Picture 1 (cartoon, helix red, strand yellow):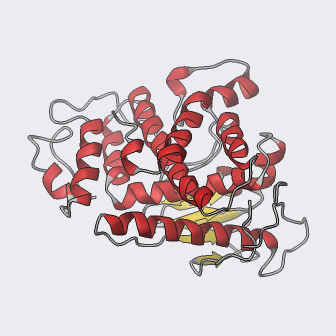
Picture 2 (cartoon, rainbow, N blue to C red):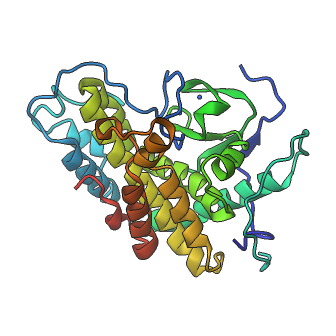
Length: 318
């Protein structure tokens, strides 16, 4: 990627080195306590919502109404019972091909990795501000929090093992930059555009949050069994992948990418598919436990956004 020398975001909070006493583009299959945030559904009951409008329809209606200037939650709450009884509140031209890794010693306040994620975040801010402006809407920028080891957010506590995550409660993205080392070595997903894809995916969850899709999902899954909640989670994750692709569409046209960058992002999407991870870690694949999507699905939905650059291409609920 040709990212050096470009604008950096001011919405980055560097908490590395500070005591921290957090959910997600986590790697599917990793374990952690899930107390809040955009966590992967565990299923709280076997009860299914009866009657009303399905989540796919709700999500599509929510997007359309949002861009028409109507609060989707106001309308959705009036749709004949809703979900089991209604809705609750809710550059430098130098090409860089190798992944950027963090030194083992304490990093300086403005190390290369921080510069990289700050630059990528600034680019997502520019792209999504322009997209939403076309619909007559303002883009509220998320804050990116850099941490080491563990962190506490409005969604609770998380360790670095959780991987990067977006917390709807405080509209912040959290990442321990050592995750990128794991992505490159353990998952063999190398390259700076692969790293940028991770961050763009989390920004995709922020888009879902501000247009009402993520809050609706987090409410609905409380009423679903584990298998059905996992299916809904896959749709949410694939849409975030597509939104990441939409961002990629614009930076490609701005001259950020070289011929190998798209391959890096697609390889990353492939390596972190639920089926690929399960096969590598357990030797078997259990489709009903998928909550992020298969390698093929993740590659497909990122590619959709990358090819078209349009929100309408990202209706994973249809």
